[in-house]
Image (cartoon, rainbow, N blue to C red; front, side, top):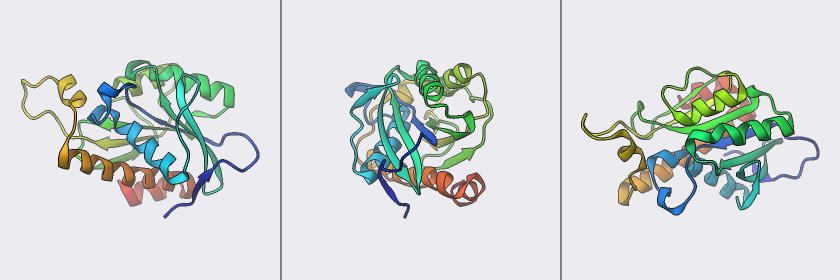
Length: 199
């Protein structure tokens, strides 16, 4: 278990953790909001709320293993997530390699995690927006498997924006807790350890 607490350490921000999703009740408990669920899990462990609005995102400051971390849930909607990322990174002077982006991935089976140092957006509009706004793809990302659409005629938007219920919702919450551990491991023990333990 990693040590979480509200931000107490003096100094600047060491990391940005940006969970991707869409704001609003109509998007809660959907596959596309997996990133928001992980941020909520991290905030819950530190005992903080995510109600403060700054940098076009709901934010909360925590320390994880002695590192000052700003948790972020952009309110710009998925395809403009980069606006929040770039504004916070510029103001707080956080380099791209210390900006961890957490998002859903339809190419991975439900519950599977994948940590990468960088790479292409893989068709994910939130990752694309962040890469464009930061002018680089060299930022770490934690992808959360949500599975692919059930048959070829099913619209992808309908799949990722469908409300989860019952066992599926419970499974997503469990995955979010596991992903929160993966994010904390990356910050406290490094990328190689996190990839070995969680990929």
